[in-house]
Length: 272
Image (cartoon, rainbow, N blue to C red; front, top):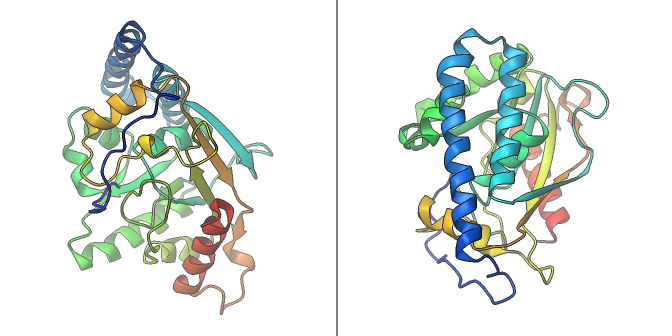
């Protein structure tokens, strides 16, 4: 779901977070490469024979191990899903900072993601996204929104858990773009539970760690290099109170009003 934020450029890492040496980085790269190969083999050989529950478990396991290979620690707070039983027919709505957002969320609860169509053509990660049943939307075609709303609604009614990043792009973590509301209609139609999530990458001094952002003109290679340079990067997932769309009044079910409410809640949590 990464887009263009023209005013953003990669910030230099400060002395406090350039702490990995070359040996450490090479070790991490070897782990990441091996784990990526495991992922490709798993979706190619195991997924065709696996049932839905096994696939979801494998996605959660693989994402946890990938983050561990980058030494990226996930901390979850608030109304964390799956603590009081299995989660189904739910939509996670979150702000978007980096490609690691997807793996961090998947490490807590495996999800079906709605992503930009360009991601489908990415080497390796695009293949993994396709095999993990991601939904791809062409934002350049207005008529594609209706198709995705219909597919998303049916997916939710079948018990799937989905995730959208309604900004439609990534930021550097110090601000948020306005949320687009169209796909929220699918959650309303499916009587789904919405879980707003505020994502934050804290730095050593408590401010936003903008070096974790995959935004602007940053390439995937540059983003990975920035993460590898950091000794102990952290991502915080703040799960806000879930919203049961069934219990909402008809007025509150307006997709634009509901989207603005969710955007406000996430901004409030991030102090934007």
